[in-house]
Length: 225
Image (cartoon, rainbow, N blue to C red; front, side, top):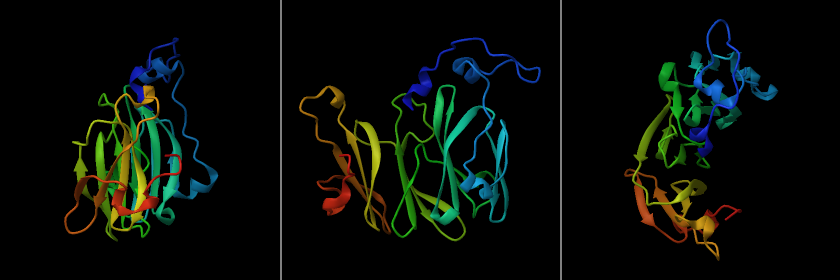
């Protein structure tokens, strides 16, 4: 996804509805497409056009303006309470998660990447750094889920320098593990050990620094290392 900021115009794009092509369309070399909602997710969506998606909320419809980007990779979380998708814009990309228990703009949460929920569904976390400010999170974030909606409990953009930041999972319901490859790890031989960090969830939520293994659990690491 970091290639989003490197999009270049490759060929002219015909004007749509009397208007010239957008910067994204110039970069893609084609008009933006109407979102293809998977059949199993269509009950969650009232309308999907080139310019907006209307999600069926639990307390009314939730409209999302998509006129400046193309959504893809649609999914649902929390037994259908949450609807989400990644998107690509011109020098801009990220992930939007819709909490259908909420209303209006507050229902649309910017998570950068697809969130990872705790085992009991009470929290979800996401981490995303583009290295150039193109993502819609550019930090580590943690949210608490209640019956009324989702509330951000932590936003931390001061993580140690690294590449390929990711949430590895929830070894415990009160601890989420994340990791990154050291800078320049792609050229390292042998492969460099990933930097591992855990976040304890409780009355006080904060990064606890580097731990090995995260959360004190040997199963915290993803299968792909």
